[in-house]
Length: 258
Ligand SMILES: Nc1ncnc2c1ncn2[C@@H]1O[C@H](COP(=O)(O)OP(=O)(O)O)[C@@H](O)[C@H]1O
Ligand SMILES: [Mg+2]
Image (cartoon, rainbow, N blue to C red; front, side):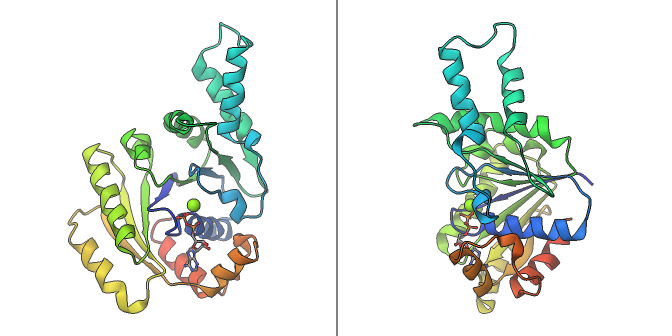
């Protein structure tokens, strides 16, 4: 099994939350498995959700800032290529947790810097992914991530939408862009988050109208008081009670992917 699964969608729809639930599911299902989490969303971090504090210096953004500083001070040996250095910085930024590894992309310093980090993302996936059985990516909401063909070897794209016009609009844009730049995912899964039961049919109809055999409706996860509570009290989301309804549903849905 070798899967690279990327979660995307509008900001705030639940990408990071649902990624952590997938991580919980994988850790439970496969006791010994190499998992890498790449947190590529500069606006929030996965580390927060799982109760881990990470400093800017430990992120790819932080390492790159340091690297730039070294170049300016001419502390970089001339016989080493920039790619080699980026590679070693990436390995340096890997955070080893008990049961999985985590890479925080972090923010670039100042305007425009994040794009350059984004440029590295494809290379980072190429360099690192082969060492893991499963890679989960929390993708930035911005579509530049896709237009740079970062997703070329992503096997499964999970597009999350909440019951909002903008959530669904972003989902549609992501589908259009992935088509335009000719990204080939094995599967694109549409996941409705926080949808009340009586509104399922709206998203179901939208997905049915797409008519691409690789775009499938994964299902729905309802609004969960337990998730709100874990978030409010700042509890590690991996500790969400196993019997919580949202987790039970998530498990059933994720079994279709892995
Ligand atoms: N199914 C759910 N039930 C209750 N709260 C949720 C659910 N999904 C997400 N949330 C909450 O919504 C907010 C945004 O979720 P988050 O995962 O950070 O979104 P994103 O990563 O897409 O920006 C968080 O406060 C999270 O706790
Ligand atoms: Mg997020």
